[in-house]
Structure formats: structure tokens, C-alpha cells
Length: 68
Image 1: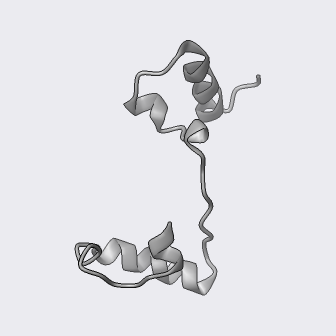
Image 2: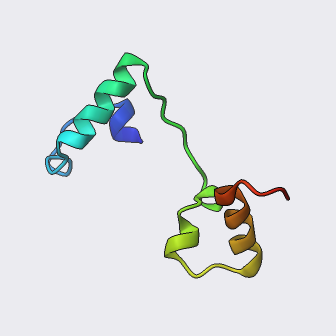
């Protein structure tokens, strides 16, 4: 997120490829915005981490657009 908003190049960021520059261009033109998403709301965690039952149910409802 920081690289999109403030694209300073350094030795640590030289590996960034064309996809980053494409996204940065969309951000600069105002076509997309960047929003911080806290860990508790990272819905991809459902597919990549071992979660508690409550957390699994929360993310499943969000991904499947189910009522509470």
C-alpha cells in the first residue's frame, strides 16, 4: 500500500514488476483507491490459514454474501 501511494525506488523495491506500475497508474489516475484492511477482515485468510470456528464462519458469510 505504501508503494502505491509513495512510489520511491530503492534497492529493496527494484524487484517490483509491470503489474505494480499498472496498479500505480490506476491509482494516480483516480480509477482505484487504496484502502487499509485490518488482519481481522482479510477474507483470504479463510483459504490460507487455520482459523477459529467463529473466524471461519465470519469470513465464509462475507465471501458468500450470507446473512448474519
